[in-house]
Length: 262
Length: 257
Image (cartoon, chains in turn yellow, brown):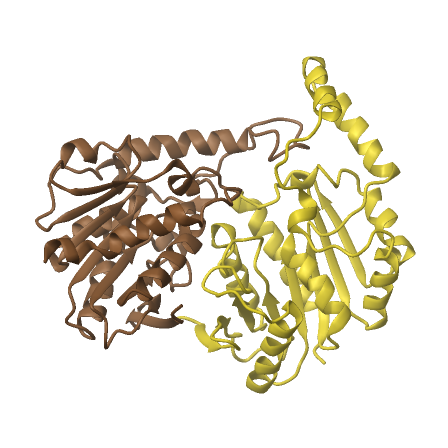
């Protein structure tokens, strides 16, 4: 029998709830947001795999489509309203035990904003989240440049010098706070006693190239023991490799187990 | 715009996630969609959702479903097979037939054209949307594309050596079991379906020559391009060109009448 069921959300939206395995200690629910424009199953079905894995560890997991993605229509509601409503409905259904939220890319951005605004968040999962270029990023660029064959250098230099195409850039698809506010916002998140797992992959080399960038972006809040940071340079942004996904889901499962319910 | 209604169909040991758009009780025509396979499933999802909603606004009732072992349906990725997809398609058609007597168009998108064609006898009309030339050719393309992605310096800029090692049974991030590979090797278009056929293709499809009697529409490169980039960077898709193709589908049973 499938552990999944359809749950009704606001404004004709719905979600898929993967029920927690029975007989395990009570754990916070996990809410996984859309990865970019991919509907709730995620690239290569990985949100389904992760949900089933976490449910087997005792976490109920909700996946649903934000407005304009997958099966959801466009909506005048704010993202906060949509997500807050999902929390309200899960509170009624499962009891108010807190939430672990976030995901890859835009899902991490969404998780960041909700963590600042909703008191029910207990854990924040950031995969390829915000980072600012600084001294470490430039050091990473230099290291990357030197690691390439000399024949590739002219092309790399040209790409830096020539004007960029008019294709949409990172700023068009991400929802990042104003530059410089990240340390204060991370501190606000920690002041709510939210635990953070931040993993950066090698697939976002256009804005993250060096583990030192994490502290440069978030300041001394990055050193808090409730913040766990890892750099996985051998992974791509979509986590296309199955073995990388298994490793990631195992890491997330271990981290989730450390988060206590409300 | 209609509201999408999620359902579980199939059986207790083969539960399938499905979405109904439109009013089944009042529908003039029915559509069952066989989704594309593997990574193309998530890449084409939004396009098919929007297409079904548009048809629902024109009096159709549509059913999209995820094959067992794919999407939101039960089952592990390894459980997916073409034979299973055909069985799931028959379940989906039966579910719709139990609820409406309206004529039923069965659509197969890309690799979904194979289960759709295998079940065409249960439908009143068949639509093949960007059908693949052959399973063997597609498998060869997948192997080539998988190596290209694992060798892509943009995807793995920090890996010292490329390609990233491949994984047995997995292609382009999705499970492609030995059983599925074997099925794909023999997936072809030898037998023409015994129901009227609509073809929505780009100009290179071999079926345009093979089945000249089919009603045809040539898709613009913009509409056909949803399948080109695995990172889903083709964001120019959902415009008037797609609506024109969907509206053409909407006339399927008008032509027959």
